[in-house]
Amino acid sequence: MSKVIALDLGKVCININPEACPKALGINSINSRKEYDDLFLAHELGSKNSYDFIEELNKLSSKHLSMKDVSSIFCSIICEEIPGMSEIVCALASKGYRVCLFSDTSELHLYESLSKLSFAHLITGGVYSFETGAVKPDRQMFMEFERKYGKPVLYIDDKEMNCAGAEKYGWTAHCFDSPERLEKVVQGL
Image 1: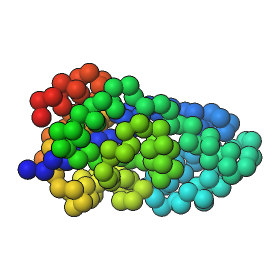
Image 2 (image 1 turned 30 degrees about the horizontal axis):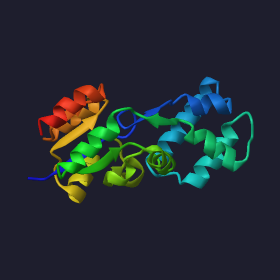
Image 3 (image 1 turned 120 degrees about the vertical axis):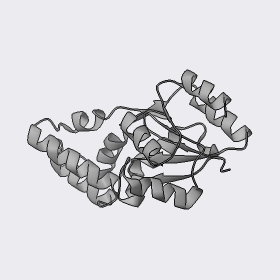
Image 4 (image 1 turned 135 degrees about the vertical axis):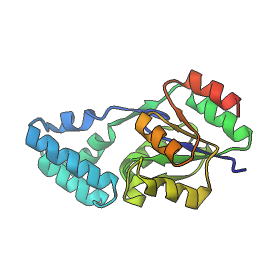
């Protein structure tokens, strides 16, 4: 039996504030917001590299900042680690589980998140939308995870549609709503 845990990143390991970036860049109009959302998705799917993404994001901004400032503003979406998750991941690792991330994220947000996670050293791999060109619950994401790590013992995500997609694919999923509830699930493994 595989001893792998598939762990979502945003709103499971780390808090996020998706509105921080467009607000800070002054992207307010409906048309600009649609362009931002389309550009964000292209970057998250890996079809727009980080340099081109930041450059185009700067063009959408009403502020026209340096590339470094735009990159920092984009990464301001990533907030602090969710309290209690470090202890859960440590407990899983001590039981011999391999914890792998399974996330719809961009390369920039992944690195920003890892720099803020106290348990990043316990993450042993991951499957990300920017590498696969798909977002959950697309089967391509699940297939890629299984190709790399096998079928996980447990998949943890905050989005019900992703958990439902995982269960349809044959995975055991836990819809995350609190570290306390997840801790009870993990104790039962």
